[in-house]
Image (cartoon, rainbow, N blue to C red; front, side, top):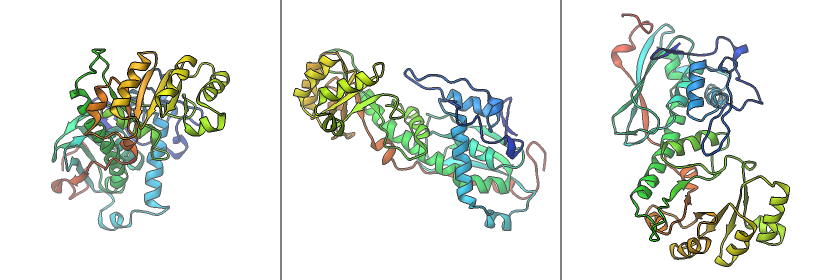
Length: 358
């Protein structure tokens, strides 16, 4: 079992118990109106305490477990870790440190632990030195794991792939959040503070994890799926015969759903406001045109800027009073944060189980 303070976390007792809550489970909490789902941890494949920690982070433990299994199965490809099996005695235990190789913002520690809980065949102990969302320095130890050496080495790359990927997203998001936090407010004194927001440009199968990383970096999430809210874009407008026509069709079909409408000119805004749009997406507007749009809308709908956005011009957009900057690059182009696993040389020499003396 994995020890975290008074918590014991480890792999499921048998293959029959793995697989989580099933297809109908919604084990995710969330933000900004997302429904908090009830969780029966005993029905999830992960240990109940780890499942609860993931829920507290706004993640579905079933999905996390599925990703962990997929990563390990992909790496083993129905075989074994031949290098580790050949070089490491079966009964050897070791202590390993997950260490940041560069400065950044960390995200995905619980997910890395979930990967280890899937692959580890024996008890293991974890000591956390930082939490998701923390800024870390190069050389800083993030997580220390003591377990069977073979298991730790077999799960190393899968755990690091996710941890590095998510920490890279969090680090990139933090850069945007910092710039916006330091930017002066809009000139009209409204007090609006622009926030950076993600898009659906995510890695298939990893959306909830990548959007979690955005939250860890200080950003906010756009819709999680096509069913959460409507976003009327140019192709919908063409298909419907006009912006206002598209809006009316969506409102008629889904009367209670939030509707965001993309516009590329100022003259498209008044009819959308008249229909009652909740949010307007300003596509490729300059800061000057964005300022005009903010004045035209006058608080009757939220405004989001998309396109032409860089860290260098983020302050200029923030000064217009726009509510959000939509930055797809957070999830589709962020480089990883370099993190490695270092075995302690004096801990991997013999069959020492966690909690015992060598």
